[in-house]
Image (cartoon, rainbow, N blue to C red; front, side, top):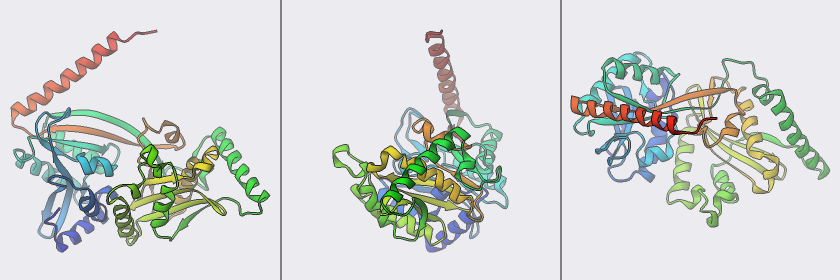
Length: 372
């Protein structure tokens, strides 16, 4: 990243804008500040496929020590910075010839395998999207040893698959009744106080408003070691740099749910191409009994249905950590993770053996588990 030039940035931005599958987390407006504020050790590297001054593929990675995924030092798109701050690991591939871009990307990985520790961890690859599918097909076409170790289905809305006039079209009738009840109660409380009804609005305010709000929630509580960005070294500067850089490209949104004069929920969303990605949000602790997070997220999903050019909302939530919130959404983005041995054959055989051992251990655990 330290050697990226202005010409590189122009080529990178051009690829990001026309990638066959959007990934805002691999946009230069996201990764350059991430390297600046959170790059550790050797920092983030970019594996780039280029044809003269045109970039065809980009895959960021970090070099990490041996771990449970690969015992030797190796390349990973889930190193310290990328693991913490990115939510999708699908590389950017040229939409004009994505198969060629994927082929040359895998060739580049193999050509540099000694430098990369003879293996790479590819974390959070999309399964249904074209880039993830094309890259996976190319890895298998080249007969590389692969260990698949992660499969998730996270909350999403595919706006091309349904007619949506508002948030209630996204949930079951029973859930919609519960949410309407919460909204009616908030409206009643506002009316009793002579205040405006609660509403969700897209704000042009500075992202500093979100950072200040976050500090007033549990995330800003030092006794709970809250994760508010204003409590992290460089955190507020990073959020501001990423958000402002993407908003200049019409790629960032600040949505606020208010019941005047109180703010109940604030959320940041990032956009690349036709996809909006959930980023960070916070809710007022005094309003917790009214489920402001649920209300804000559902209203936001309805809001993006009316934004021209948006086809998909990917909430980027880990479904194992947020099962209740995942259930609010009608669609899923399927994600997988891989360890790929880049050769030569002893490394490939070692990964094959690890995969078989893992399958055997899983079967033994299943056999030993008590059954009803």
